[in-house]
Amino acid sequence: MAVPRKVLGLGAALAVLLAVFLLWQWLRHDGEQLVLYGNVDIRQVDLSFRVNGRIASVLVDEGDAVAPGQALARIDDDLLTQQRDQAAAEFERQQASLLRLERGYRVEEIAQARAAVSGSAALAENAQINLNRVAAMRVSNAISQKDLDNARAQYREASAKLRSNQDQLDMLLSGYREEEVLAQKAAVAAAAAALNHAEIQLRDAVLAAPQKGIVLTRAREAGAIVQAGQTVYTLTLTDPLWLRAYVDEPNLGRVKPGMPVKILVDAAPGKSFPGTVGFISPTAEFTPKTVETREVRTALVYRLRVQAQDPENVMRQGMPVTIILQDTPAP
Image (tube, rainbow, N blue to C red; front, side, top):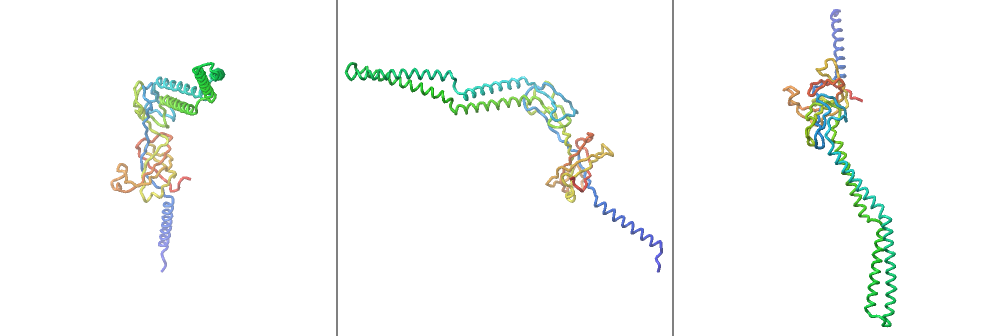
């Protein structure tokens, strides 16, 4: 029995539609994009001085954009400058003492010691001659035993003085003891460390921005007395800008560090921002109740962090974002 042409045409159309559907399914799966939802997670840092003092000036206000190294506030540095100058003077004094020890004794001191040795040597020689003469006279009983004892005592005294002066000259010629030089070098090192500490404190009188960011809070004004560690500014760090999102376990294998992403925010409809997956948590956690529905609150997910580029300064802390990931990691 012949099949009607309409039935054949309908079957062919259905076959084509089925093939197109299967091809679309295959292409959709092959180029499927993973869509995640998260929030902007801008980091903040409390800035404070490392030294105590009175604030002389505050240089930026809330909402101001600051660059790395930009001065934000200053403390009166008159006391810190004085401490630095005192430390510098002490360092120079210790260096001068070390130089004196390394150079040894003065030429004038050595010459004076040589003269003392020459004088004592002459006295010792004269005492020796006198002792010999007195001893010869004593043999013939020309003098008493007391005179001989006195001559011997004078000779011993002159010889002792000669040895003392010679030892003094030898000490001057050999210079200062090594232990004294080492002790003075340690004193110089301690003075240098004190000077470096004073210079660091003087530099710390200027509060500088550690990174690029925007001033969120100005907590102190000029004239306020602050202690080290008290917050003066709160700075939001805008570079890099991080997003926090979560991925479930079945899709975890599709996310790799370095993978490029496309970021969508409600505040900029029709625009997308580039980003990169930077960190994937190695441990699972329960889905945060603040970002997911009740049905999936008990599901285990993995936290990931995305580094975003926001040249238009659109994203704000806590803003919801849509993150679209491609299955192909960035090269």
